Image 1 (cartoon, helix red, strand yellow):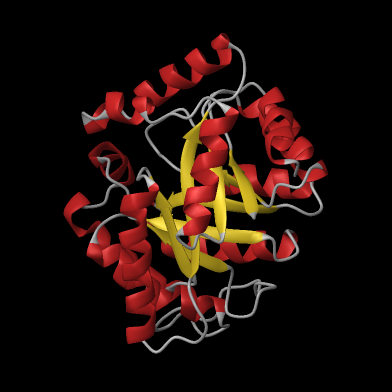
Image 2 (cartoon, helix red, strand yellow):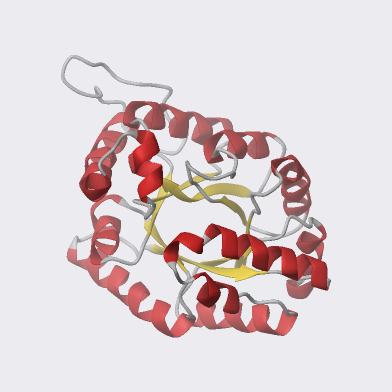
Length: 284
């Protein structure tokens, strides 16, 4: 089973320690969320730093809110990161749900889905080395991964599932228990087949965890409440936080049982000792 770590965002200076510990262990990926109007570190800059400090582990956005990013610059940044990481970069991507992010970026919140579709067409074209658009030549560097970095779409709406078939390499599912995620995974597979895509989509699940002393757990709960306050469902998210080895192992087994290729354990406390505790729990 492949197990990744979602990185906490409250103290960016600690993330190098997280990355080095995870790289020395058997974790497969490091994930980092994206928000504009929040105190999280900018994900592409941060992941580039972490990729340079590690040698084996993959780095991925989880998920990058593409509509708030300039498309041409995003194409250049992601190709650069893919190349400089030795092909260890996964672009988890989505539309986001915060109006303030869109206001800060100067985009229409109601057009963010259509904007993402337009962006994906341009990203794929740019990564293939084709001219960016009319009167604009190619934008380099070329990514190391042929066709561009691996792309996983996150979200819950049918449009997000549809994008996997149209543009993506797989799906990143978060905030749902295995029984509900099972339906989303099967929908992704159906769309994949409908578009005639070869092989199968990569399926990744994410679960919120905090493993450690009471202070670590309470810190994680506070950060979850802060981050999800805008949804009106923050208490529900906090109640789903897994805080024991038994709960976390059971969730990983359940997600693996419905076809997850990797399970991301998203950590909401900055305590870096969680890396070692989780590694011991899974003997990774």
